[in-house]
Length: 85
Image (cartoon, rainbow, N blue to C red; front, side, top):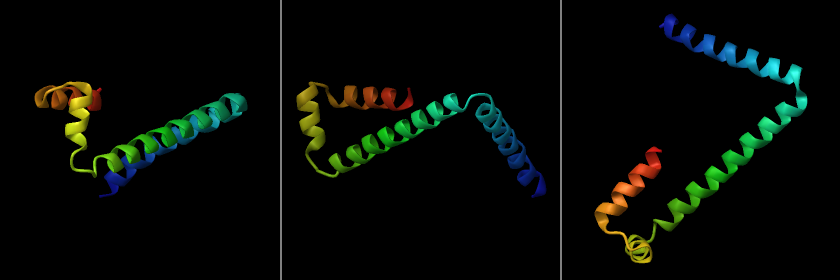
């Protein structure tokens, strides 16, 4: 039990040390990284929420397949590839 807690502490302390070093070396670079991180988080959240909202409707899959011209197997394969990549 204690070994598992200890294994989580070491990477956390390493990340904290790295963050502090970056902040001390270049505060401007740190601000850029933080701003970029939050833009990515916000953009990803907006895309996921929109996707969840759109797929609540029953016939959206048929409309999407009609719009793109893909068959069921192409749609599932391409969606899986995009999600994995």
